Image (cartoon, rainbow, N blue to C red; front, top):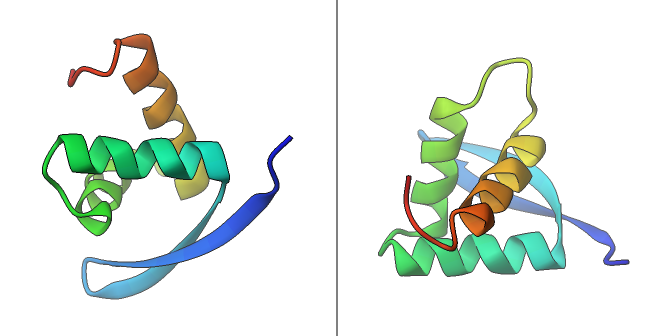
Length: 75
């Protein structure tokens, strides 16, 4: 089982952090690359669309899961 690692990113002009296991982080970076986005831009997009009762780390994991279920395709 991969350990959870805390990471920081600047979105909307402020620093925020999230905690992800390495496989989720690697997939998030791969998705950003495939979509020609910076990691910060992808995280900002996910942050803007998440429900306020979900924390950012959970929203990122769910995004990666949805991406994988779609076969690595945009919605």
